[in-house]
Length: 364
Image 1 (tube, rainbow, N blue to C red):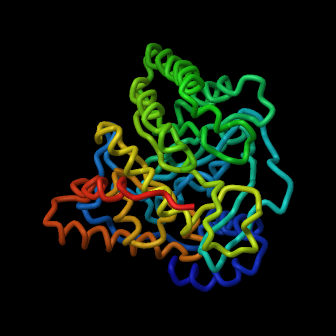
Image 2: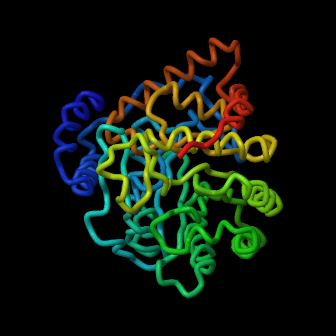
């Protein structure tokens, strides 16, 4: 039912203005009109991570559900985990519209949303009454005009500590001026000192340890990656997400969009983000779980992310063009890949082609 209704709706949604289509999608999911996936996941797709178990490694990336409206629904649709946000302490309207562009020929999006969200208190109130099905992450960020951006991240950890199964510290969005500066080693040290100290205080008060992941940009200079990874390891982050959207404009994308401001996601990001993922895997030696993001649009591209070093993967843009049937197609492909490799589970495929990917040069 889900796949059939979604396939009928997708052409109509693509005729709508992108943000309007997105809101219609969220409202439809909230209403329950689509029905849910009832096919149980193959046990070979299971992933053991952070002292827990996920039924499959596929997550819905941040940006789809900024305000925590449908995390449980996305689990029922078939995702192994869901991530909400990015959420900032104060409500934020974001950048002027139009701010989402579809590159239909390229199966891509450009967004310059600017962390538009309802703010901590409204999202917190919504999460308080959720069904709490499955594994949910909270992506935390800083308000555009915050005097102390690090304090905003700390506040996010404290506010959602009882709600989140993990946190994603988003210092890689290209749409908040200066935010990516927090990836520099000195700034990263200060940020993680304070974030980890806040978590430590909560643990000392008797709360469990909630994993903290950090999301980096695909536009980080390759020469800067060793220092960034060294600082992330030194602070004992629980995962690294690679990557956010890119400011690069590959020469092959539709020329009408070359000068558009914002982060590019989808198919054109796949190679750049996967090479970066493999390089981070090499630098960290498989000691830290990696979350592969960027351009996953099929079972084959999902498998390539895992082989490049991703323990978990996330997608969003491809759903705009492929619809929710993509989730089951990816699962089927991964199970076939496990069988072909003579492996016991998808976890055995992580990083097996990282060296091949890391040897590639990042193009324009």
